[in-house]
Every structure is written in C-alpha cells, then in structure tokens.
Image (cartoon, rainbow, N blue to C red; front, side, top):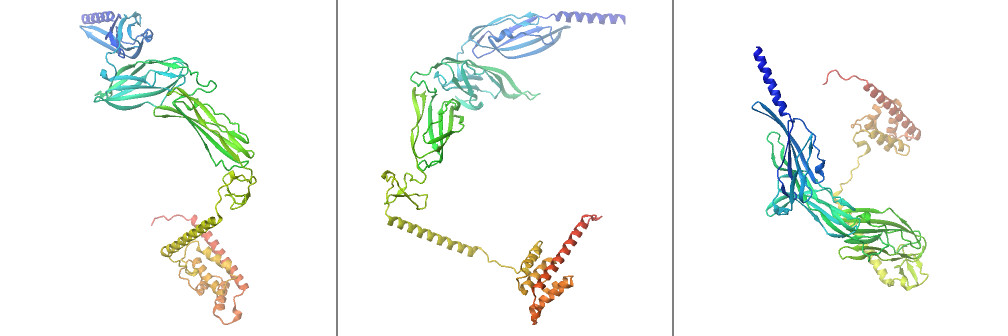
Length: 590
C-alpha cells in the first residue's frame, strides 16, 4: 500500500511540474495576409500560451491607422502524451484607413509585446458592382462645385448580394463648416443589375456649406454583419459574418457669394423661388374701418424654410397693418429640400382715399443659370370709399345717381359725376322685361313644384284616422292626459263632451278597455257622491226636466271629487310599491 501511495504522489508531482512548465506564457502573432485592396480587411491573430483567462491588450496604437471592426477570443486546452497544453487565441479584424504601406505596431499583451507587421493597401483593380464582391459601397454627390449655403445632396448606397444585412454602421457624415441634415429615414429596396438581384440600403443627406473654400467629405466606411439566410442546426441562429466596405470621400469647391449680387440683401442661392399673395375679400368695396387679410407665401426649391428672410412690415398710408406670426415649413420633394415661409397681415382702413400697397421684391441667386433673379409681387392700388359713397363698378342712372347693388334699389348720388366711375346704362324697358320674365319663370316653377308635391302626398301619405278619446287603447301614461282634458275643459264643455271625457278617463284609470258607458263608470267609483253626480249628468242628457241641467257648481264638485279619488289611488299605489320593496323572494322558483 505504501508503494502504491508513493507512486501516485510521484505521478501527481510530475504532472504538476509539466503543467507548471506549460503555464510559462509565450506569445505567437500571425497576419492572414500582407497585401490587400482598399476596402478589404486583415485579421491579426494573437495566441497567448498558458492562459485560460482574459489578458489585457492595449489596442490604442492601432486606432490611428486602422478601424477595429471586430474582436473575439477562444480558449483551448489539450493533453498530448500526458502533457497538458492551454492557450487563448485573440482575433482582431482590422480595416486600414489609408492607401500605401501601413504598419501594424507592436501591441502590449500582459507583460509581453507582439511583433509588428507591414501591409500594402492598393487601389482595387475593379470597382463597383463589376468587382463581384458580396458588398459594395458607393457615395454619390450631386455637384462638385457649389456656392456657400447652397444645397448639396449626398447619397450613400450599400449593395449586397446575399440574403440580408444586420446592424449596419456607417461613418458619420460630419464635414467641417457645414450643416448636415438627413433626408428622412434610411430605406431598403432591390435592384436588378446584369441579371443579378442586389439588395440596396440607401441613406440621403443634404449639406449646406457655411464657408467658402474647400469642403472635405471624409471617406465612408461601412461595418456590419451579413447573413446568407441559413441557420445553425442547434441554436437556429442565422449564420452571420462581419464585413466592411469602403467608399472614397469628396472634395467640393465652395464658391463665395458673387459680387453681382445685392450686398444689402439676404443671400439666397436656390434652384427656384416663387412668391405670391392672396386676399380674403374683394378689395374694390372697402369703407373706412373695414379689415382685409393679406397672405404672402414664399416657396424656395433648394433652401430650408428657416433660411428665408422676413419680408418686413409694410408701411401703408390710410391703413394700419398688424402682422401675425410667420409659418415656416420644410418638406422633401423629389429628393430636394423645399422651404416655405407664410406671412399674414391684417390691414384696417383708417380713412377714405387711394391706398397704394407697395411692391414686394425678393432677390435670389439662380444656381442653375448662375445669375441674380427677383421674385416680385407688383404694387397694387385700393380705393377706400367713404361710408355711403359709390363703389367702383356700381350702376349709374341717367340723372347722375348710382344704384348700390347691396341697397335693394336705393339711389346714391354721385357727387363728382365722373364718367370713369359710371357703368354702362341699360334701357329701363329691357330691365323691366327681364324682371317680368324672371317672375313668370319662378311662378311657373313654383306651381309645378307644388303640383308635384300634392301628387306625391296624395299617392304616398295614407289618410289619417283619428280615434275617439273613449276608444283609445289602454296604455301607461294615458290616464294623465285623459284627466288633463277633463280638468281643462269641464267648465266650457257640453254635458255630452263631459260624458265622453269621463268614459275615456275611466278606461285608462281602471285599465279596462271594455268600459264604454257612464253607468259602468259610476258602479266602479267607490264614492256615493261621484255616483250621484254621474247619474245627474246622465239625466241632463236624456231627461225632460230642465232643472236637471248639469250646472257650474255640479261641475266643480265633480272635478273636486275626481281629484280626491285620484289622490287616494296615488297614495295606495305608493304604499303597495313600498311594501313590495320589503317582500322576501319566493323560496322556490317556479
């Protein structure tokens, strides 16, 4: 037993010595290739022996000349002839920023330093989609020379030939001394080129240079992941691999504002600028105190609405001007920025006379024709007429009076007798004949319409059949209406009418559709005095004694007794309803 224990301890100590020797860390560095084309990547592999955990790698020396696309690591452990080996591989995918010879500097890994490499980055032999690569990036610029603050359109398109693209990441478009705006969200579509279907991922920008000179748009680098549409059998995850693409940047000439442009006006370089005005009412019929609203709209193709200058508050004699807050908008039309500025003014006429609305002149620079143009609203003239005066265009009679079309034929004297303000005169007999014809036509149209309505009513509306009060169906709520008829007409109605109303009320009061005469009603009433009055009413109808007439005192007494009868009934209904609220439900449902 001692020999066995001694042998086991010896083997264990030998294994520890072998493992201790293996744990002495050493580094190996490999580069997959040293010559690449621009837009391609290289993979730097750093193998650290004797490490199963992570080590610190200083990557800062790489960042000045390379984009670090991805980093990943994998640990390994194996035993060969009772010798245990362990190591960790660190894979760095690098994208060179510039052409020519580029050096991968030494990196500090733990306490050791890797070796350096030199790679050569050359221009690609084939460019564009003809290169046959899975991914191709292109950058398109609308112009290579623009004026300062002129619109410059910039488009980035990523073409790919496999199933999909994940996590797209592009270099930010941030040139110095320029305002950059993205036109909408990125969009994707498909394009067929030489029989091959490409997916396209597109981003659109508008750039407004703010200084003259050279505008530098840096190179665009794409980093992302591509999937071929297949998946891992175990985890069902799409097979993805990191890729990069490159598009060369641009250098754009930005020209200064030309000397020919008005130096005291706002610089507006655009493809087109239009200006127009609208009024909310007729300007030929204004009196002192009247208001009118003027709207001026400026539309610029190639400029943001915020770049359009305010038109200023016009100074107009005989009118007070009250400007409103301007409305500034921007939209994208056919890939171009279209800015809009809307200004509104409320004008109040303060006195009569001729009013001159001054011209609006907005100079701008036509970038297509390379010359200055002016967007103009010509001056306009308004005549404010004194209250009670003659408006331009009113009809003037032969004796120098004018007819106001809004005054229903009232004559207004023309104080000046100016023929320029007088309308053409029409003979009176023609006007009378036209009025007669209009009256005849309208009368004939009215007669035809009434005849048609009568025919329709005769054919479509059934005859109304009125039901006698004492023959109405018994229904809830009818008792109140029947009693209201008795109460309102008992002193004026004839005995026969009172009898009919009493029968109608009794049918509803006792809810008996078979009650048709006064004798049945008298038997149902519990008060002897009510029965006696009903008999007196019956005698006044059929008796020969004149003293038996149903007089006013009897009518008043009948109404009082009926009210008392209804009051007792209402109290009984309330008591019964209150008792039902506290009744217990039946023990067994039927």
